[in-house]
Length: 165
Image (cartoon, rainbow, N blue to C red; front, side, top):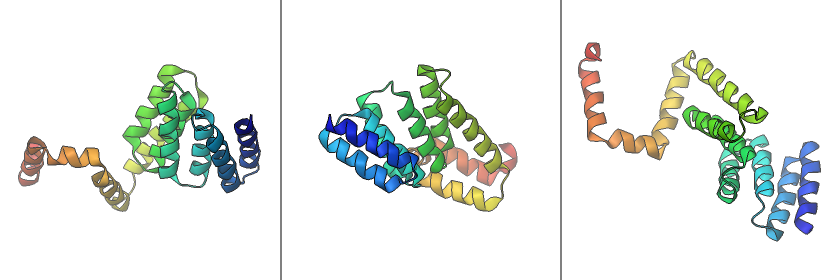
């Protein structure tokens, strides 16, 4: 099958460190087999290597849409969240992968790395806090939470009377 040949060629290029070349091969494979979860997962990993987590996330999500029990795709999704500094979402993705396959090395390592990143970033200076705050505020889920009147009231109360919180 032509799609498998492109997947294999992409994997060889990936192993050689030619991530753009690997992506081209995976693209060709997907033209021939647009429901191949392995091609989406592999392309996701190549995008991760190129530090393009947004593109990588789309592919991880597509692989999970095709097969919600595909553990490698959960690992890719977790890594994308790490790169976006969305640590809570990374933890969720790795945990979902480990629910399916408790001893999966990628998910276990990703989970441990996320914990380490949380601990490292929480001890960092205020620049990192500002960056994390700005990133969090760009998240639609957080924006919705912040618009909630009860949350707004709690934040106002904490600002006006910090000792009571």
